[in-house]
Length: 123
Length: 108
Image (cartoon, rainbow over all chains, first blue to last red; front, side):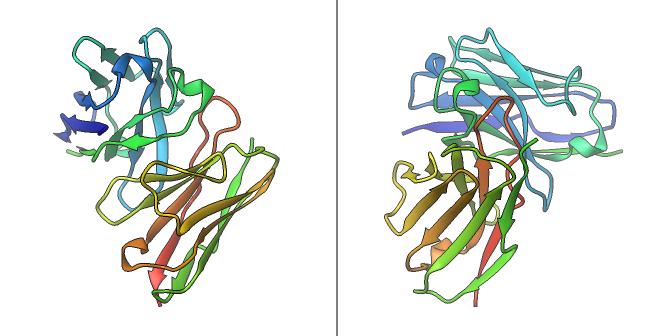
């Protein structure tokens, strides 16, 4: 059974940093691209970042480019999102999401989602 | 840029009835379309990909159809657990495209 368990969310001041983690199990982690997708309170879903199975390729949405860094540790089946220079508009539930193929670019949809971790940026 | 439009915004249906949700693309996306279900306080769940293929574990009452620019998600006989928000998402090209704005299926 595929399981994705996020952690690391919380309350942070504007300009601050947070590091999200996602522990994956139930599938061969290195074989699949992974993503972060977020959802602001009462709003829709929006892509944040993706990374290939090997970790060699990454993508960032324009609204986080230069501030967020996606990475993965395939030896520990863990996905990360380092979030810097946080803004109020980054407040959202952040979902860890599995792509159905090794390159998310081949089929950019999500076949499994984690339960999400809440990030609140406020002073 | 391809724009996805879901309709209606809210659909009021009685349990046991059929629900039909629409998703329209501003230009052809072939069959590169997925549907997701999101219940309050829960993560989304993949229902349909390839416009008509049910994801693992999805009940047969959910079906997807369409190609090109017009897509439909049908719930043949609505169960109480089906009241939720449904999103469509086209994935015909990279980078990943925004999810639709969603259709809320509520109890009539």
